[in-house]
Picture 1 (tube, rainbow, N blue to C red):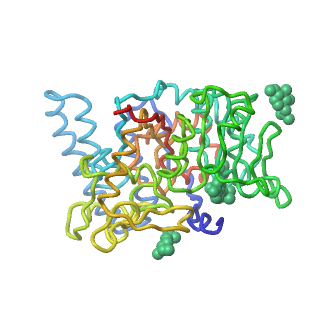
Picture 2 (cartoon, helix red, strand yellow; picture 1 turned 120 degrees about the vertical axis):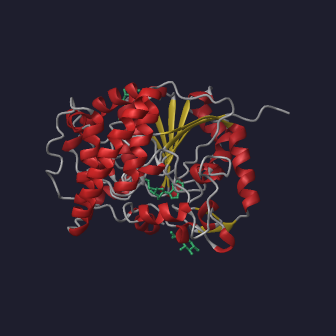
Picture 3 (cartoon, rainbow, N blue to C red; picture 1 turned 30 degrees about the vertical axis):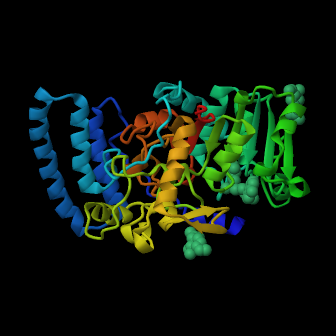
Length: 436
Ligand SMILES: C[S@@+](CC[C@H](N)C(=O)[O-])C[C@H]1O[C@@H](n2cnc3c(N)ncnc32)[C@H](O)[C@@H]1O
Ligand SMILES: *[C@@H]1O[C@H](CO)[C@@H](O)[C@H](O)[C@H]1NC(C)=O
Ligand SMILES: *[C@@H]1O[C@H](CO)[C@@H](O)[C@H](O)[C@H]1NC(C)=O
């Protein structure tokens, strides 16, 4: 079981090319300029091609100068945000680092009333400042195949914000996420549901076993969907189920988990691995909500399409980017993963029709009050991550080019490999459909 998970997470590697950020430590310089410099530098660092560098430099000079000419005109008539969008899409073509959010089609789940979370990007920044020193004291320094920095921060932030009466996690591995929950809420009961007790890992190396955690593990393991939650909650004195936080990191079909959580009456859920369309070992919210009516959603399997071209270009930059051949299975099936609804680390693999996939999205949207994806903590030129495709992720909390801020927050002290696990962790609030 772990094996598969390991192969999915393999590939995290560290880059040892330090010092390519010189000249951008001062973020008082205008952000746009820095960001351009960073992007170009980053391209060179990443590819290491010599000849294309010369050609690209020429293209870059041309692009930059034409960008200033065009944007000067544009600025007179249009808003700053369209200026921003224009500059981004120009550079998307140049270095493939980032694109306008949504140009490749970023599937968001629509909530019933369009409600969103209370916290702002300022709160996230403040949280980051607080969390970095905490993260540095983590007992499991190398949590390969488990959570990295981005999701650890997200889970900590959400738990601390919501201040639940009890926290339940499904899928603990060595216990890193249990530790994260404990840092957020020092005195709150945790229930950890995981086949192998984290104490088993202690024999071989670092692991975390919590003193105020009830483990459904080892011989006491019972799947989340089979637990009698009503009785368990009562036993722990929890009467208000809206004050329970559930964290899923067990690589199960998220539609299945959603239905189980709803049935038990829970409403606050976090899914660690919210895999993008075409990737992952289980059916995810991202995949479910990827629909034709979302900008760029509902993919094209036509090999000569614009999407195919963009995809194959981005594939060369980002490990998790998938090209059209990987995205589409027989019969042009792109939903789920090539028409399959994967479950349990891809141990079960059920084919579904587009019709069923569409019905699944309707169901999800009918119970969804909030859908919030954690942004990556920092832009890829800062974190040196190469895995998730920034074109299909929200803008990072610390944007590319803001090296000064990155450094001030202490993020530059962390090993680069801790930034390689971002998979769009998502926080949901759900409630039963309005009776009809
Ligand atoms: C990706 S790891 C979890 C990583 C962990 N949350 C962390 O902080 O690093 C997935 C875990 O899910 C466990 N698992 C497998 N099937 C499960 C199930 N049905 N319910 C709960 N956990 C399960 C695996 O044994 C493994 O420990
Ligand atoms: C468990 O939590 C209580 C407070 O709720 C605290 O007094 C106790 O020290 C904790 N036990 C451990 C082992 O952390
Ligand atoms: C998932 O399982 C299917 C069939 O069992 C297999 O063809 C596919 O390669 C697997 N994918 C991954 C990523 O393990």
